[in-house]
Length: 199
Image (cartoon, rainbow, N blue to C red; front, side):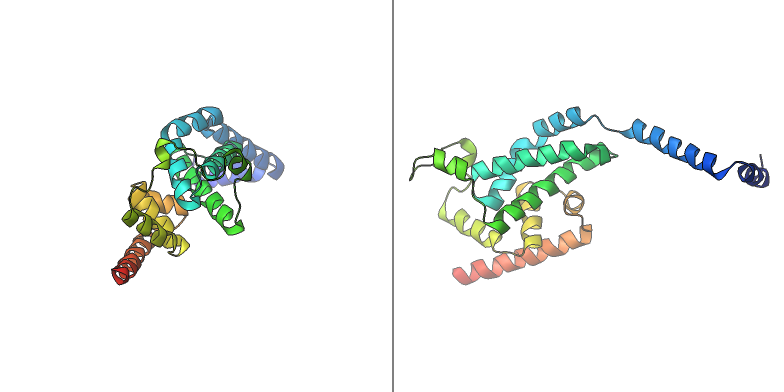
C-alpha cells in the first residue's frame, strides 16, 4: 500500500468513523498500560512508606502529622493512579505529593491536634524513628536546612537524606537535573556560610 492509496482510502472514510476508530485505539492502548492501583499502592507502601514518613517528619517535625501526610499521599496516589502510564513514575509522583502536603501543612501552620491531645502534656511518644536528631550539632544543622529556600531544602533533603539521584530528584520535583545540581550547590554554600558564621 502506497502513501497515496492510504490517503485516498482515508478520504473515503467518513470523519466520524475515523474519529471513533482513533478513540477506540486510544482506549485499547490505555487499558493495556493501565496499572493495577491496589497492587501499586501496596508495593510502594512496602518499599517507600517508612522513608516517606521520615521525609515528611523532617518537614513537619511532628511524627503524627508526618504519618497523616503520608497516608493522605497514598490515598491521593490511589485516586489518580489511572493517570500513571508507567509504574516507574509512581514513586517520584508519590514523593512530590508528600512534599507538597508537607509544604501546605507548614504554610497553614496546621497541627495534629487530635494526636497532640492524646499525649499528656510534657511527654512525647518514643518510637525508633523519633530519634532523628541525636545531638546538638545535628539539631542546628536541621534548623539551618529548614531555613533554606523551599527548592534548596527539598533538593538537599532528597539528595542527602533519602539519597536519591539527581534524576530521581528532578522527576520528584518536576525540574531539570541541572536545576537540582544548582539548588544543591547553592543550598550547601548557604549552609557552609551560616554554619561557619556560627562557629
